[in-house]
Length: 457
Image 1 (cartoon, rainbow, N blue to C red):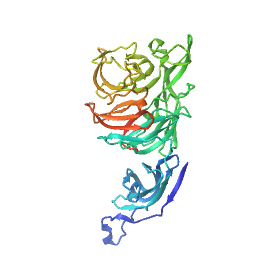
Image 2: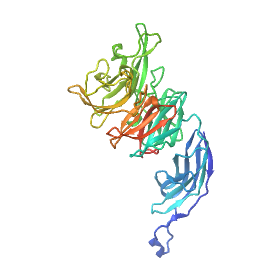
Image 3: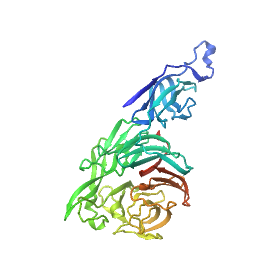
Image 4: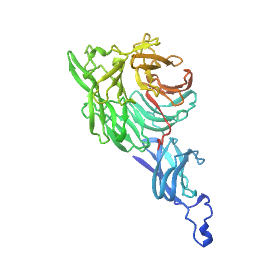
């Protein structure tokens, strides 16, 4: 529920003057200046975000100037509008537990600008359950923002932060799952109560949901891949009876934007118990023998799927689910070359890079001793070799028992979420750490780069 804060008066004064109208010499009236009235609110369940509703006249663009004091200092994108109407503009990065300031700026087609009055936006204090994000060293040369999913004990957040650790948007959660942003600025996250992925507006209004309707546990929380026309790829699960007990096997599911099932296949039909490194003594059933934690669509249209409990990355035919190759694990189709650890174990977030190489966070649970690293392989699918071409380890070395991600940035640097350690780091191609942040007492499931909290549009 959102809380209304301030209602402004209508203004028609421009802060810049329009050029003289040739019609004046003919006794005609010049065009009327643009005007605006607005109201602002801070969200009760997200005290670093809010919105301004601006009613404008004779406007071509609308934006909001805002900040922690009357000097403002922050600005939203300028949204194109047409003449008279109303626009809701989201605000991110408000100061919690304080009075924030906002002013609407409207610009007419001829460049004339009108400013609304100073709106006072009162935001409640940040809940104690929201963890703190603390920059330890350095700064990001690429700038931008991060989507971070972090959980400690039974509370956590899906958060948008900058490289100084400032919160720009968040959603409290008890789930440890994927978190994404759409091009138009909505957010997609895993809703543990609904066992589904939800797309919401910045204000938190539901847009759509995706789940696995044939799974008793709904959607798996590890990943959702948005597709065209609001379709999405996600993971689900089945419980299958086997001799001595039962196992959990993963499914690959495609849903449309209305929540209808498009396709579904079970990995258990293709991956046997001989591939798992999980304990299958069936002291406790069902046993999680696969534990899918990543799904990606490749350039050729097929799928890359990572199973933590087989220590394997699989290439699958997107339609049939047939296994095209295995990388790692007990039945690897590839030979590892120039890798002193001879592959990865309990890995997370494998991604094919534009050059065809594979980048993966190797959690390294089964290495001796256990150790975590980011490793890049050049894959030769013809000769079936995976040659290590780059590796990065944190200094001092870390061991992430679970979770995490590694993303190659456009700059060539690599952004790593070191999972259970709560550390997020950016390193360069020489494996030098450029920036580091910690999330107090939390597991960081993923940290993904975005350009702006406002989306790409």
